[in-house]
Image 1 (cartoon, rainbow, N blue to C red):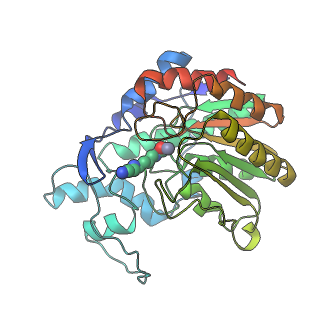
Image 2: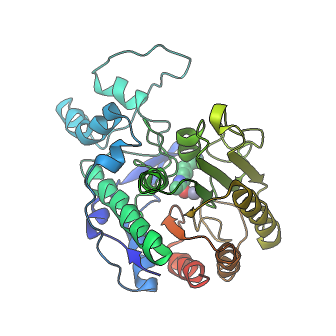
Length: 333
Ligand code: Q9C
Ligand code: ZN
């Protein structure tokens, strides 16, 4: 399968995150991409599709924030990377604020996703890899983008969960613009893809199906419950299949089968897979029990459905196994 990556994605490297109340080393490190490249072999550089496909998904004020907040933060005399400390969560009215801390709260959902001066460039090229792999998927039927930073926790106007630009949403919207009438996103990262769900919540043309750790026990808590099915034109085109901690291949595979059946009934013309290897048994921040070989089984089930497939990298934090896990999945196609 054709693979895409740009070295500019490596420049984003926050030092630390606030995790369970303590500062810990950042989990979403550049070495993740290096480990995957070492296992799958060299990748093609993406073509620059410009920012129109990004603006088709993300709010203009939010994009401006991603580009300018690190300088505003430094100008305010702050140390480290941009992080919010107050959020407008309690149904506050829209306000036109300018203080960096007000913007950081407005445009983020957590304190585990620092915004650095290098973030825009890295996340821009991460989105470009998704668009180039989409071109490959629409051409030869397969494409893999080594997206890093990942995307599925980022909403139209918020960052979170190590994500800034929603690569799956950008690719899905670009596929619609390229003439695919129906697009489906299958999210098999350990965590629920709250950003992708939010973006397509009211859309009947993009199906979102997610297998993930039950949000009653795991991040992002407020999204991903089984009764979330979409609204308006999107009623019934969101499918959430939360699974308990400890889930291994049999239950995971059965849930993926349910998701694939729903996507087949929807009648998709393209499948985008938000693939996280943080479902692996040894992942340092997650609690499922998939093995390296299981990823090939899951990929074969997906391939058997016969759709063009675009695979996008999301999470996976066990550096020693990440390359083998991604290789196993891609080889299954
Ligand atoms: N104390 C992805 O896998 N950390 N993001 C939660 C828990 C956020 C993971 C902190 C986990 C986000 C793309
Ligand atoms: Zn994850």
